[in-house]
Length: 203
Length: 259
Image (cartoon, rainbow over all chains, first blue to last red; front, side, top):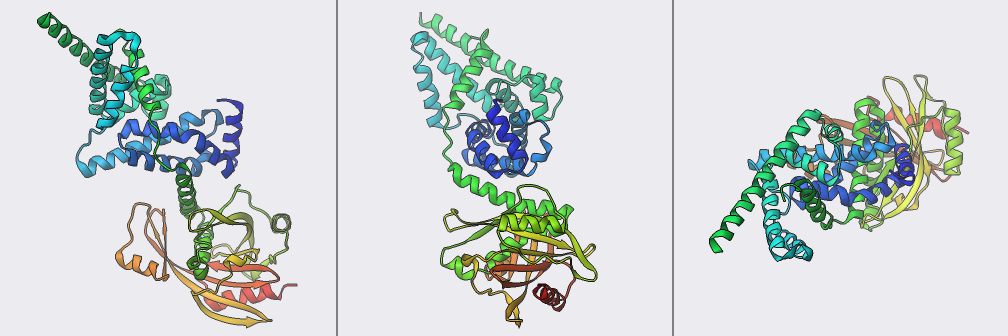
């Protein structure tokens, strides 16, 4: 965390609403993306962000180390998102909405891969398919596994830090990460095998 | 590809998420966040300090007291906040009042033989218009009195935008050329996720009930207040505790008598 941000956090901790507003403006987009990864729903993500920042301001006294502001904020957001998902499950049985759950987003994902010209046409197609498989797999993951994937790959937190954010044991984090990885790896390998078989038949 | 699974996932997730633009109005949400903080800080204080919760109610009740202003689109909501948790002795409070209000409100040592000054604090009040833009801001001095039963006195420099006739007034009297308005309001505190009943909503729309969200359980209370304006300063004396309105009026008269 740079000094300017640390100063803002310290001012916010002292009760400054101006500093809080600045922190909100600098963080809400990233938090929104994270919430969207967990819930797969824009409207829920907005509500989660709102609730996260309300809790951030009201419970600011619980943040003892200003430099840990971001992990602390992630912690609030993750737990708020989990509560939302739990409520949603209660209302609608089970929702597997996840990242890239609509057609437009999926098309966007393919476009991004198509842009990677250096991989060659076949590589691009394979990766695009693999990406869709991953997206599909992520959608099926339980929200707690999805959160670990998010914090590890997007936020690049260590398993120890993820344990703090999610309020679980580091062993649990490692286990969830291992299972999520294995699932994704299996899917990718199955995908590659199918491609190879298709190649042999057509060749 | 499986060998580089970690890199692939990291790259893929980052690319996808970073390309996602929030379609929310961030500034409007920020105003909502402040409103929620305001509502809930009242409730949070309620659990630890009943009087502090009453303080939060004042801001809302003042809005109710400005029905005409609301209708004309000037002020639709008042938000009170305190930038620190400092409380002051009476001497410090008087000094802070002069410093922040640029005025000297009357702050008595006691309101009656059993109601001595307990502590004081200063809050910042913001008035929002129809479009949630801030149109007003002023400091307000708050002084708490009593122990088991509490009464709070607030004062701020007279604000013309809030100076409409109070429709909630139960009684008016003139004392030494000062008009004292005595009124009550029924208050309903609800947990954040609880919907008020249709009957309570109707009462709220009619201005007969104030609903405040965020308490741990449903509570109904009667808010009693006495207000007056003197030498360019608006005063409000209020309580949720068991005081009759005559006692409150008597305390107000005592403050008006102060030199």
